[in-house]
Length: 519
Image (cartoon, rainbow, N blue to C red; front, side, top):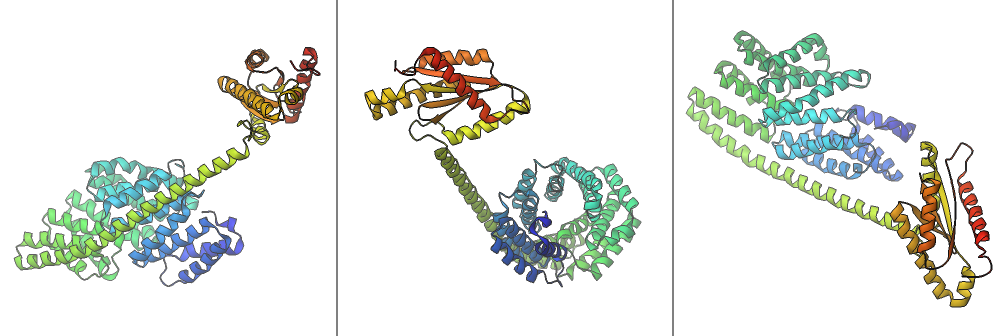
């Protein structure tokens, strides 16, 4: 989102919010409240969307699920239809992440796909490839490894984009992408590709990765453990699991990584490494940061562990624990499904409202540009179309022709038959010209009084003369047609075309002698 367009003070406030939104010790909420007041005063939907999106991020970082979903829905409602699609795609991603961390994979997939589809027209943006990478990661968690590997191409695309725009990208994104690529390769039994990702990460260096923060450091360690398990390197597994246990003991478990940590626990059980599995189990047991879904998965894995080591009493306790967390998880899951449905309904209502506004605007424009008597376009519509065709003809260097049709001796017709019959005459001529215009792909409008104008785009003089003959033979009353046709040059003006067509019209009238008598 381009902050600078909002002016100095507002732009600085937006930058400050973006920089501190994840910091629990910052004054981000008071800043958001101030910016919300500014956005409401300016009646800016885009700015309000930014405000509510950042409210959602602030609550996400603080583990407040209900508040997050409330504000992300508000953000999306204001961002739909705005020019900047990147922030809207990010908002859909945030909804998807919350659904994923609570085990609502189908909902998460819907919103990841929505974000990815939204950015399809902007494939070089910083959002398109990463949204595809999110889908790959989710499919892997769902056990859809073949599909996940197909989507891994977006991770590679994201890496290329990040490396191309290093000056504008946080380096953590590159490292995270390689770890993600490596894990998907392992889950898809593509060990050699996982090693290639590891080689790049080794080149980046553990010390450099550590500077990126806790998330990437822990994520990289998880990848190394998984790589060692895949290679069946027991000494390396022991060393890395001890390091993982040490890091988890002194730090917090990040909700976005709990699935990967539990995957390691599961892999250790699969290879029969109960010693390291026990170390990890005891470390995880004392952590309170896991949500209900993570606790449910952990209980299921503990059942698997205690069953394997023959501890029936602990196994039964874990069954009861699993049941408790299952009930809690179902409550959260139902809430997320409900929020997803209401969001979809809200988006559908917005779509209908936008569609209604679009049709209303079309109707208003059509009424404003339609001649009330004849039903064909009026002078306003003619000016707009003539301007467009003139620009196109000048750009493409093709002929532009304007033809004026005038009903001969129309004043005498009105005097003899009355104005009602005169109106019927105008309607008949308009309908005839409209039919001819449709047949030859022309534009026709009522110019005023008993005059009509036709626009001939990319026609030869011979073709226009043939159409002119059709007009003269098709109308129920005598009419005269005059046209001017030429390729616009640098000196050409639009009004020249109408003026010269008008001159040709009166030359033709003079030739046929229809000035004084009606025939």
